[in-house]
Length: 330
Image (cartoon, rainbow, N blue to C red):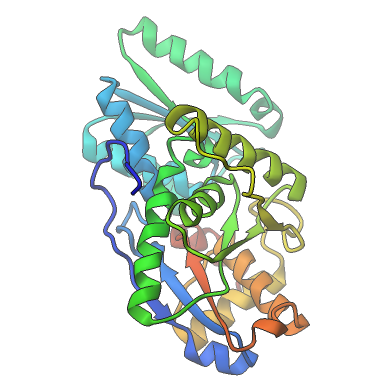
């Protein structure tokens, strides 16, 4: 029995688990499914909402009136914080990373629409992200406000609870569909969803691998980041739980030129899946991960799991797609 901390009811859950029959047939196995966490809400949709149920609950419980968080200029996480902060009557301040003056489209447009305060910083300035956070914490303290800082992607010990809960939900999905999946596959950028799924399957005793396709950085980065999130969770919530058996499985072979930059083959994969299954992926996260999954199936990486099931976790991000319209030829 897992005892969850306080949470807010912000996500529309449970989300559907649906088969991708045509794609599975075209690729020749394994059987592919999609967990539609892009449907956790409307403007606040995606995997970040699950984490924010716990993070924002902690902020409210501490009496905070201001939320500070960070991400790329098309950050799904920052958009979700902006929208949910408005719903809860909290001031939101976003620290966004970009070396060029961004167009107010996609997630950035929704950030502005939701009334978030936005500060833009270069990649070089972002190297001192802790210093940027502290600057604004001090700023709001001088104004008599109490701020709550959420790390990039909502990925820390508290945010991990979002996908511990999602793992429990997936276990119920598997039972309802009478499937025993080989793995859940997803995109990883800040490591929080990855850590939560691994820990959630462990705590709920679900025998299912977690395969994470990186959209930035490398395997060593995610090994360290996931370990840090798990250590934070363990220290804060369950010091006596042995997590030594949890080792992340990260594939960084499909990152492409850089974070947020989708090469042509990723855009082609997005078009292919949309036309075949009506499933809309995004160019920053799910498009890269699904492209990696398709390529690995074609390469025979999952040949031994030909008759098994693989679940792709759709973590959202559709609004970031609109910033790529011209690159996709539309």
